[in-house]
Length: 189
Image (tube, rainbow, N blue to C red; front, side, top):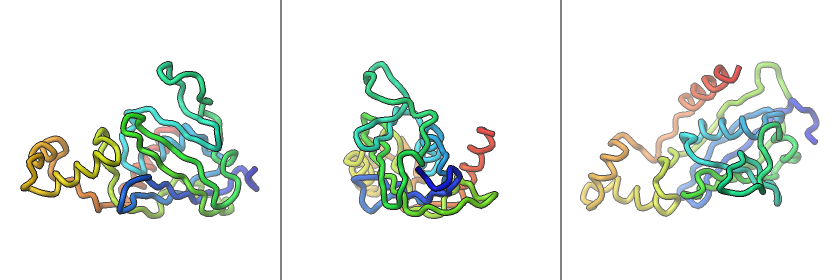
């Protein structure tokens, strides 16, 4: 159990199987439930929350029940991150979009004492843009980038028509993420 239900967790959310790495460092309350953590990760990474997801801690899976995937999942609402991550350097996984199979590792980097007005969620650092939804997973993203970046590639025009010509895979805007996290908090309040 966390030392205090209102401890502040510094977590690092890293997208697996993509190089160079794509990650976000977040501050969240240890009392944040997994349903809210899902929303926070969606905003921080830049996903659009259009697909199913699940968290895995040990051999337990948490998420939203779906008839197509059986009953082996524990409802995520009310399960606090502090009940799963209790010590620094512990990890859980977060899977998003089962067909594209985006796996994220969530690492508890630090447990910080609660301070009024600093309960999160806030993004304190990150690297690179998140892959677009429905790009085909890690391998599809690699193929997408090849075509998107190379005007001579036979699929270049198709990729630009699909996503527009403003996608920058190296871009990360911390201020933009925090603005969206603040909007999320307003909606939930």
